[in-house]
Image 1 (cartoon, rainbow, N blue to C red):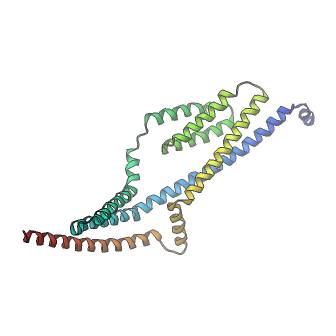
Image 2 (tube, rainbow, N blue to C red):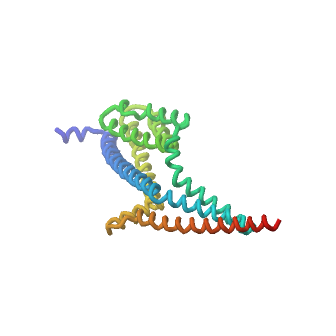
Image 3 (cartoon, one colour):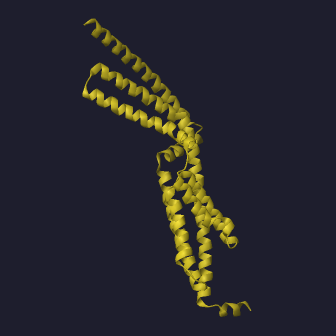
Length: 266
């Protein structure tokens, strides 16, 4: 009986069944990639927070002291070279301070612009799981909403716009009923999913190539040797800070002495 049913299926029906299986498989791969990337983002975000608390704030303190030393030396030497060195040291100190404290401040002050809120609502109206036609689509829409929420929290307008464009392309430009129209819609959905997998792979590669990811790898390797790399880095920085404070005190004494000599000579 089943053989008769298969024989009675049209070529479009057979192709549609095959495409649905392909779509299910590619969506599974996409969900796996998204889960992996979300875990990687979370791991690196947590590690970066630990790094900034233990090490980043010490780099900021050290660079600020170095900038203050360079600025005192301008008073001592009064040269273009000294001024240039002081400007560069202060710029470096500002960048380091922003890196150490900027993320926390931005998180506290995060207030999405109205355009982002509007875009997110437009996406949600189209992909909310409540609008799904069947269980498979509900599962897919749930994953899409998770992606949209993550993009919104990151202020990622590009991803939200791409999701909206994808929905419009499939639902708006491919009209009609029947196997042929459905086949075209599913083919587009497969193409979009494969494109998203490629984008996720590229983002993962970029994340893994970042400095914070490399430091995370080094820290994990050190932990396997029963070492705490961040604690070691912090200890080294504290020694550098102590040395920089001594140099700052020395330059301050030189500056005060020079001013006294100048005052005495008047």
